[in-house]
Image (cartoon, protein in one colour):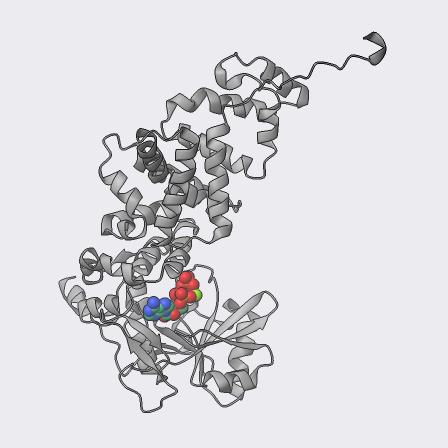
Length: 450
Ligand code: ATP
Ligand code: MG
């Protein structure tokens, strides 16, 4: 609908919300976590307004199980802290209260207001030269809070007072039409927080929705703004994009919008200039496997995903160094350091995962060295299974040269100890398979024999 598109391009949260009475919506308290209900009532009984907002309301309306329950209130963080013994105040950019119930945390935010100068010096907001919001601790009314949210589907408020839903930005229509649309002027909203571009992609695939044209159009131009976002925050966002069961779709959309380039520029460049298309096949296959595992509730290690994302930049760098006459192992080791530190400028992968990625890469070089005790010892390494899966991925996406090796390891892992020994004995005597000859000392002659 042409008019609908126009309306959404100028979507501004209205001061007067649509209030949907309990009898006209499907959300009931039985959908909520009991701890979220406790928090809502404690705030209400303390004399404050309290609402559930954002992802949980959106997801319940769509029949998806919410990941967590976010509460918003007109109580300040200090007032919240007074009401709950199990409360921690966190955050600088956004000050928030966490109410802790064992493993479940209910996040309680104070309603945010506009970030123009505030009279109260304790309430601060700050923008960068690119229009990016650096700090956002100005409190305000529920109407203002709604305008500050990213997408209309995320600006629905469920009131604990009378069980009504307050819809400030036509979020109910957007849910019905399955549209991701930013509230307000899209360019301004992306400039305030460029991560919203990644969130648009994530919600579109997670909820199987379409990004409305006016929300989609500026992304191509503005993707570069992601370079101003701290690499640690981008790491968190990539985890959400790649470990939520929709990685393959997210990858394709990120590539289409030019967002992938901002996150993994070295890989993006290789993919763009690939003559065979092998690299993109490998990455797409890796994400397809990751999605399959997540959707089957199997474990996925982020180390594997980042090892795969940096694999081609690693090989490229290693080849360059070998051309400069560096021996293979040295070149490979130096290339690892290089790609990891280059990547850390964009996406700061924590050390616990880069260590895992290094192990997976190291083992790739050693998989064909199987003679003597080597195959056994390699198979006992903590990261061996991931490295073996990595080899399978290489073959699966077309690296035929490794097919025999992968087949060998697959059989090896199915054998008992004797079967494994036989397999090692059965190896040919190519260089890489020769057992390392130890220097054998001559047995000392007994003095009596001399
Ligand atoms: P999910 O938890 O499924 O990832 P969510 O919508 O709950 O989705 P959160 O990151 O938990 O996402 O954020 C909670 C709510 O806070 C959002 O629904 C949205 O209203 C608001 N929000 C989060 N991030 C932003 C942002 N960058 N800009 C504006 N509003 C945001
Ligand atoms: Mg959430």
